[in-house]
Image (cartoon, rainbow, N blue to C red; front, side, top):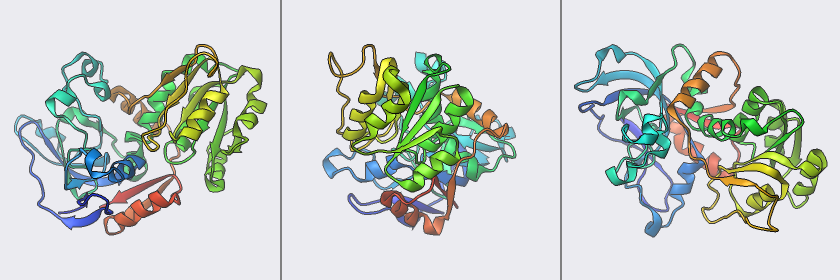
Length: 346
């Protein structure tokens, strides 16, 4: 089969031919129908050799959708032909967090060597992929896998970050979205659907600000040196009740803390360069500002997102690429010229 793999430190990924895998006991073989491209991939491919821990060669893609083509021993063959999304943050299935469906926070994954597809295990940007357990499949029925596959990360991550703060998003409050790209434009739609808050979106790209407007942002601002003052003109002295930073660079973290109000939540979602840090403490922000680094989301939250998709709530902007053009999708990602999410269709 064909797959896009990261094979050499410091080089761009490659389209290669590799053996088609076979499912082992308890596993599922998925014929991939869509796979998303994410900034997390670019982050790991940008790591120097001494910091890279994901194994080589690595088949990329932690956003996956497909049709069940075969099952291993012990798996119900009634799954054959089912169209499903892949829940990516695999866990042990047995610890306290996994028992709550929060495999994204599995307490045993590191000790057991459990890693997500595309982030250690072979990923979805291939013609076929192995899913370690049928519990990591979320059926989508007749939904289009190309427009639905971003839910597995670009939808799930902001959904998890938002729902934990819904109690603070009352009428008259403000939510700030920094970065209106693949995850940010989904966050705007979720905020509009789930809360009465005024949504203020910031980005450095006029195209992405226009995308933010088109999906429902009440206000848009260029993310520059005057951004904090601009946000405060809309929020007033109360500041923002929730700030979602989908960039994660030092300037955006500083901006997040500058616009957050008393008792607010700041969610650092973007990886940035992996070096940035929010400055917290007395005289460094509003009182009782809660700063968190949420990671992906729970299995039940992905099921809820699929239900929202069935209701027509979400309109995720995607650019479709064939597998032959998948490397170009990564080039466009690095150049910042994608509108929404890139989806590769084998």
